[in-house]
Image 1 (cartoon, rainbow, N blue to C red):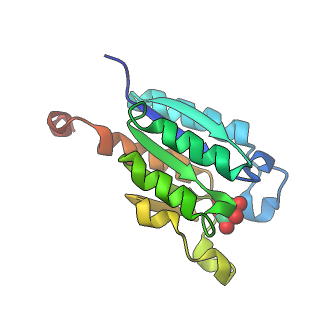
Image 2: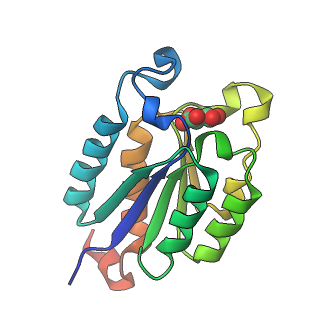
Image 3: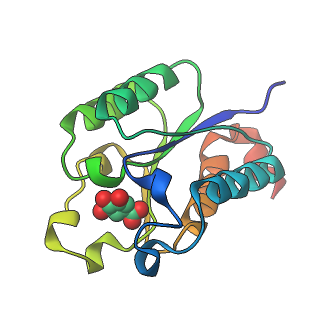
Length: 154
Ligand code: DHK
């Protein structure tokens, strides 16, 4: 059987990880985050499709494409977190478990970062744990997509 596919989506400016405000976002690059996710996913028996875009429309199209293809979505919507009802609607329409990840603790930052439209579609939210938040999201997703009888295996 093929391993469940988890789509890991990254929004605007996350291509600049490692360069961008490292005191907030850390020194890992997006390639480092993809390697981390690939390693953790392999250990969990998951396949990943890891992507980044600066475009809101492209992000929405990728979410739409998850329906019927992926078993779950992990998303750092970055700047679209607080602005995009289109992204929220696409996530709701996907009918998939969604985990929202933020590298920083958005609640300790400026007030305009506190309200997330995406959270309305999220099974869970991870914020403030740096890029390890992606690894934690994969671990949580493995539980969410596991067949019911696999829960007993510890
Ligand atoms: C990343 C961004 O680009 C910001 O727009 C969000 C998020 C926070 C993060 O912490 O990963 O406000």
